[in-house]
Length: 350
Image 1 (cartoon, rainbow, N blue to C red):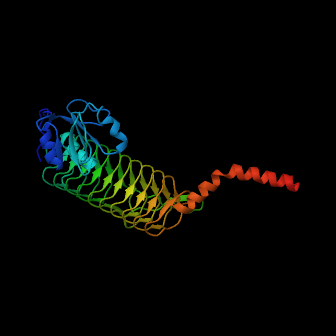
Image 2 (tube, rainbow, N blue to C red):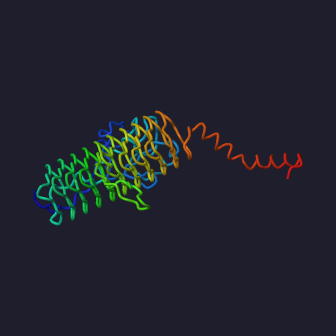
Image 3 (cartoon, one colour):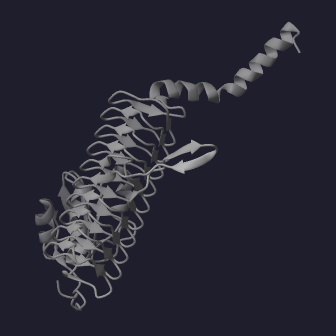
């Protein structure tokens, strides 16, 4: 692998509006030759930008935006703006934004001179290794993977193809990461699980000798911590997306295509079914099971298992129907207390 060559500055990207319409398979209303040079929100956009309008609450901005064109629904009409009309404006805009936004895919293959790559590490084709990154012995890295500055990858790891590892990620030994995984800055994968035995009043550390397995197409946010298993593996299955500041303890299993939102925490040996949503600041105790398709509301404290497709809320978490009744009754407590005082007064009870 040769040192990274110095690159010339990339030329600004541009698309004709007809090319935008073709890219998103949309219907063009306006000047097909209009030049689009960037993307922005509907309120922030300037001349040359393309924006999108998906929600009806932003309709008042359609005629006011300074954007040169707007991606929107097929039934939207404008007397001033060029439009690209599609079935799904948000999805179409994401596709256009991906064209304009710089990505790690543009990284040239090579190893920065300050990176430390063990002689026994095996790197695939077109791999990028940034400044001060470390890759230890017997680790494999798949084709097209980009490893940014200051990343640490321990021994005996397997990293898949087209993985994107942002600066300051730490990946401990024996971790397995699938293809097209994204790891954002500060994530720590494979740290020791929080396991101790109290002997004679002393907390004695239990060795954590398991591993972490992250399957294909998982995205892991900034400063997420995923602990290694005690004996076997902590397992994040394919397609799952994890927001920033999430803690996942040892031996947890998270099913396919789940969403785990910021500051949620999952205790050891808990199993989360596929297509599950765990909202912000929710906490799950250890050794429980959530069935497929469960939704855990923000701030919920989950202390027991729930079957598939349960929607739960509160602390301790209950079904949302039951919890709504409790919330409604709690809001009326001042009224109930006033009534109670009136009854006590009539009965002569102090």
